[in-house]
Each structure stands twice: as structure tokens, then as C-alpha cells.
Length: 278
Image (cartoon, rainbow, N blue to C red):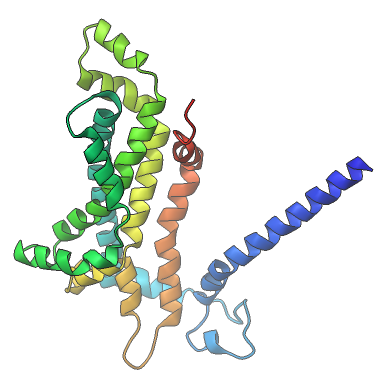
């Protein structure tokens, strides 16, 4: 009787998980099949998930258009620069917060946490004024520096929490052998902190790749637009290229999907480390 009860519980659990998976994945599935339809077939009635005639014309139009390819290159450049710079600063800052005592440490830590409470929309106009005043409007530097303001606090907190899980005996062993703090950080702690670094990099890249509001406000030329803005530009004055919008959405989602699948093990380990103090 107990075995039967466990089997029924497991069955209902799997059914619930399957329903949740279908509910979450259905919009993505619809977007994928819509990208394989013609623009008119998308609005056919009654609606159908599968297209009558499969066509890759929307993907061909995107991949053969230098302007749309530029959108992807801009997103890759900005996201990678933000990720690398944020990681370097977060590793150095996280190591300092985790291993050293200095004046105003608690104040700085509290300030970093407090920045996470500010809604980004409230900073849009001030950042626009600063970027214009510095002559950085419609440049890569404007996007990179602005995105780093939002990625750095979380990255520093995450790296600090991960370094706290590493035993201080690692540092002390390096010091005994005559090594420096710099050597201990980059040769010993960083390799051991790889899960946390990958998790932080994935979060930073994801935030930079998907950002829409500041990319729309801080750029004006088509050559500087990123993928989210490129999708919005497919909305014409009299007609929307829905199949191309769906295709660009699929292509824009692939880097994130590949990144998460490739680093899933490290990502989960890095996100949960430091959550419980031993």
C-alpha cells in the first residue's frame, strides 16, 4: 500500500512537471514554428502550430542582411566586454572583501547591496545626461560602462560569497612558500572558484545581451543597435515582419541557451555556493 502511494505521488509529480514544462516552453515552440511560416500564414484562422509550408526565408533574410548581422556583432561585442571587465573587477573586489580588513568595509558592502534596490528605469534620464555630457552618446563605451553599473554589484557580491567558501589555509600556504597575495589569488583561488566565476559570467552576459531600455536610449544610429533593438526595428509603420521578428528572437536566444547548457553544472554550483554558512 505504501509502495502504491509512493508510485502515485511520483506519477502526479511527473505529470505536474510535464505540464509546467509545456506551459513554459510553448511560447518558445510557437516562436520557432512561426519563424518557419510566411508572414501571412502566421495570422491564418484557425491558428495552427505547424506551418503548412516550411520556409527558411526569414532566416535567410536576416543572415544575408549586413545591417541585421551588425546587430548581432554589436550585442556580442558589448556583452563580452561587459562580462570580461565585470569579472576582473569582481574577482579583485571579492577577494578584498573576503580576505582583507580595511576601513569602511562594511559601509562599502552596504552601499553595493543598496545599489541593487534601485530600479534601473529611475536612472535612465541621469545616465542619458551624463553620457551626452561626456561625449559618449551612440558609442560602445556608453553601453559598456552603463551595463557595468548594473552587473558589478551582483558580480562582486557573488564572488565575495564564493571566496568566503574557500578555506583561508590556501592563502596561508602560498604565503608560507613566499608567494604574494596576487599570486595566491590568480594561481590558487581563481582556479578553485571556477564555478562561481562561470555563474557570474553567465549572469553578466545574459543581462548585457538582453538589455533593451538603455540600448534604445543611449544609441541612435542603426550601426550601433543591438539585437533587442533590431527586433523592435522590424516593426514598420504599416506592417510588421512577424516571421523575421520570430527568427531573430530564436537566433538571439541561441547564445544564451548554448551558454547555459555548456556551463549548467558550474552555473548551479556557483549560484548555490555561499548560500549556507558552515
